[in-house]
Length: 262
Ligand code: IPD
Ligand code: CA
Ligand code: CA
Image 1 (cartoon, rainbow, N blue to C red):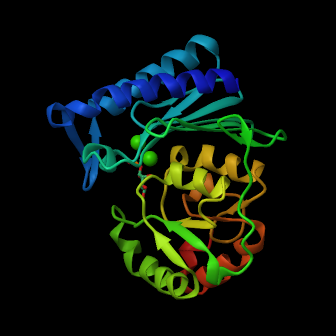
Image 2 (tube, rainbow, N blue to C red; image 1 turned 180 degrees about the vertical axis):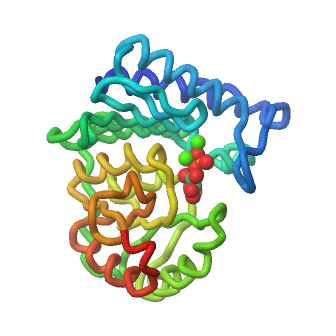
């Protein structure tokens, strides 16, 4: 199943890279404010779905552009291009994200960065790899030396003030905060130790699913805002290495209203 996910992610990566030198000719639609979709997103997703449904016709699929296809106890989460805004500007930080859940457990994960040719993979219970070499979360224990990632709540403006409060708390306590623009790739960068932690409000399950298993299998922690495991449902995540995760949670929690405590 991991091999199928890898094959699908690489096919999507080929589509994404092929269109990169013709960005100005791409057909782009707006799904909502600040929410764009291009023919590349759709074409890459079609490639992924073709590979996965070809191999596992009974599995369910939840894909960003084509939605939900019901199936058996297996469910694939697909974000064919995470970081579309970056991509449309030629800003080099975006990725393909594919994960497989069985019943309520994430089992397989792939995040593929086609520009750096970096393939992040994990299978539950078998560790996580970057280009087939074992990867681990960072070992920094002092938040003061930590580099954190985040995402702006740029579509859900109702969360902006809350996010600014969490940002103020974490910026002043850490060594820096980056907003790179692809949640899936940012989570993969936590898994391989380039970032020491990450938080974002209001993500979708296909942004998080693969990155979450990568982090767990690389020895890190990921939780929803209440410290629970409902992040695929709530879309709110705090991730980090095990020494820092609790510290990040305790700096964020005081700023959260009741409805964001999970
Ligand atoms: C977005 C990216 C971004 C995050 C947004 C996501 P998309 O995904 O992951 O970093 O802040 O919340 O929706 O739309 O580029 O697939
Ligand atoms: Ca996404
Ligand atoms: Ca996307």
